Length: 616
Image (cartoon, rainbow, N blue to C red; front, side, top):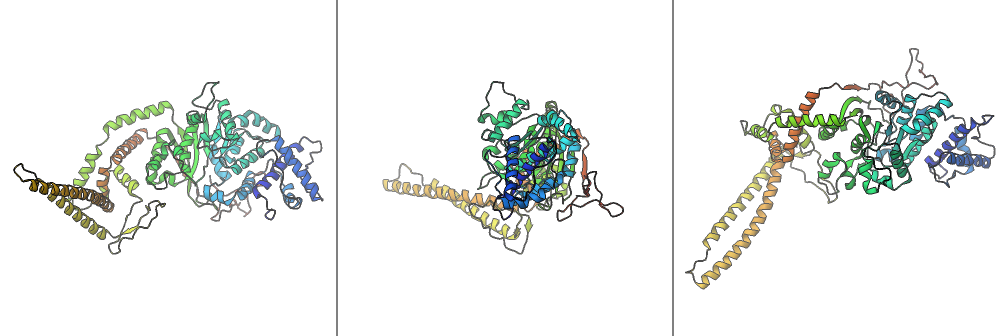
């Protein structure tokens, strides 16, 4: 395959597709004989396999282009068919299929977009905890390999015979299971694995879950829109005769009515489309953040909000994300937004090896249940009452700053919890390393570079001296400007003065005004620089950071909201299930670790597959 010059993924996918069709139709033949095999003549092999592929396209349209053929030449095809003809795909071990497709997925997709297939035992845990029912609509908005959908299918409607699989396909899967993925290859993988599970295509679409406007430009997007409308899954339902335009995409396709959302969105990738970011509350900080390259937000942050949009009230969500999204101080706004819209059910920390060898990112699964309108109204009423009781943080901060002795730093342990937390969130990425002996490094940047907010070593004494010098310059300019104003008074023209004296004074007045204007402009610039330097110097002390909060109206509002959030949590005070996986099922290299019996033998399941050593 590697030497054929053809796209590895597409060509193997075609062979799997053809074999799936052959296995399915062989059941209807009297002899049950399979046609997918290698013949002595390579040309004959090609003729049979390509014909099976073309028939498969007729059976399951919409996955390949109508004029598609197997592109491998007969010689290369002959090599590939041998191993495949001995494998049975329908009813196969799904982990093996996942591994095969994940291997075929381009490395660039894994690194750039963070598209990693979720291990089957993690999926199994998520599905069992969500406990979907037969008449509940389920969607995975980043379905990848359709692992979640396949497990929901097996959990809700187990089927050990072809008859039962056909029954559940028509009665359940074709109506209640939905999958969306923006990547063409991932969407193909989803459809293939759903075929293996005995579902057929059902509702698996290649589309961008984050932006319903894009659903108006592709065939899959059109099918998704039509399917959602026919299944009555639009929260804002238009009249039966109304045609929805692209401009109305967010009005009608933002809020949907799924009972269950279960997903592992891409860990990487950024959204820079300003128009799209404006649609998300969680992108507001990104839009407000100043950057020469424009606003950007990580894709998985937007997925958190989008998943809530997809759920109907009381709907349940399980989402796998990097653990930092749940516990980083600077991302507290994500947690606060989420907990105003959903009840936290559980948090399960996954083992660090879960997604190796592709990434060692520590991840967790978050389980939540979306609030009803009554829940939201009750929370709003509670927040209003607590808002009336919230402290005046302008007074609180002034009291802390005036606490003697004022010439020493404030003890951080004396700060209220919400103030200490905001100081950490707001200033965590600013310069914090102080060195009295080294000079401050010069910042090198280009116009295209974003400001470097990582901690740097700073000579605090040198910075103090720079502030003192700048202050002296400002004071000197202020005194000079004051002197000009005084001299202007002495240049008042009197009636008794001569014509020559008046002319001299007018000239002097004009010169004074020009010099005063120039001095005023310079003084304003110097004051701005002084304020910036003083603000930077303030970063190195608790007292200084408190003074910066006091000047920031937005920070004062955040402090007030933090206090309200903490009090709301105290009043609600409900239990949350917390757990951490101790056995991750993989070693540090990303290889699966099998479970061994007391005699040192590998333990297998009923189908002869090795059991993975995991505790999900």
